[in-house]
Length: 123
Image (tube, rainbow, N blue to C red; front, side, top):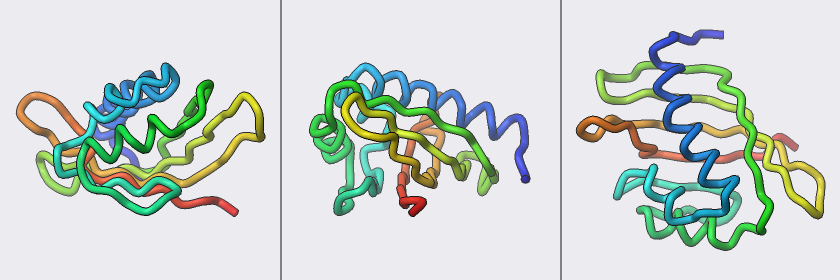
């Protein structure tokens, strides 16, 4: 496992905000943590931009929760960090869905935002 504490902290800051908004079922707030040109691939066809992210999370069931573990990080450039995670999405009416998640977070001004988000299933 290769992880730097600085990169891990950057990812945790972004992903803790993302998780909080997902758990609260606040799709517009989730989308606010993505860049305007973010490439987003959940478990449906991909979309580009915050509006697609908001629509994706608005369609998720109430009670959806996210629990993540960072597995790998890489600093690709001063303003770009790669993260590889395992995420468990919990539901109120069905079993937990475990996925792999790859993210690129980019510093935009003083804030880090998700510029690329790609989920793949474990099974």
